Image 1 (tube, rainbow, N blue to C red):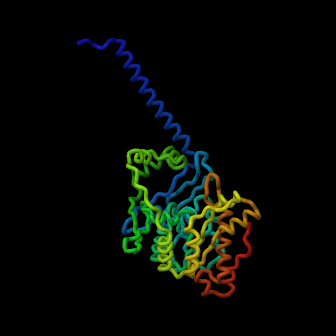
Image 2 (image 1 turned 90 degrees about the vertical axis):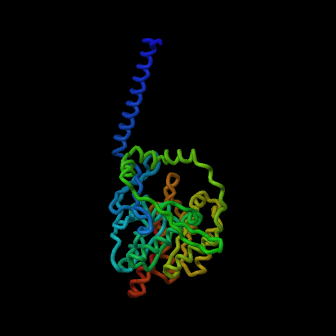
Length: 375
């Protein structure tokens, strides 16, 4: 049996040496990037607790710090800390006094603007001591979740009023199962149920992975998830599903809201197609938007349609109300216009937070007369 030649052995050694050098160089590069990113405001989303029977809604870990930035340029860097119940609000949610709950997805969560510029903070300043205004905003939630959070909040706090912010696509998402969230299901007999998809909370392994700034930059800022991409590559394509009929979703949402609070105590804030407004073209609204507005008003809910408000602002001032094109969330001006129009709607309808009826006429005027919108 012949032995390998010295030339072959030398080639193998050189190849092995090159491979080791390449691996060490790669590790050094990764380590260098990790160190370099340590001082950068890399996006770090919320750390959530488990969702199950004992804890039926998705809540952040109290006291956890968060970091917000968008895209590879780290646009609009912001930091903050979750409160005692795990929401992005500097207030401690406690006490027996009347509460106005502001519910929604990432628009209410408000990572893109300072707390003082959010819808809930602006409403809080308007009502003064009449009611506490607490934000219950969680990114990725839908109307099926908004009613779930409202029910959960009413079990723990004296919630007497609610402001619910709805954005594009919310009603369709309300029928989709999502980890840690709720969705509407329509049975064969026509009954509608609200079902929860449980979710495991943060783990030491997940915390260790998220501690890497490089991982967070690739995943959070660049939007690349290697695990999800690998799963998609091997997963069988899901069969096409018919979109959920609009009418029953709208009815299910409004009925659940009405089961929690009288319609006179609920204000719905409907976002607009802001891109079409800026581009001076016809908005691209689905039929569910008009149906929701009509049915909500017929039931007695206060409805704030932001399309006319944003359209009037664009014609008058032409200033952006969001962070487009990098981020579609409202900026401080967008939140201000929303708050101004909620207050104006309370004035026109003669409605304000329920506690205003217990106070003096002067207090009611203070609550429900915000004056002209400030631009």
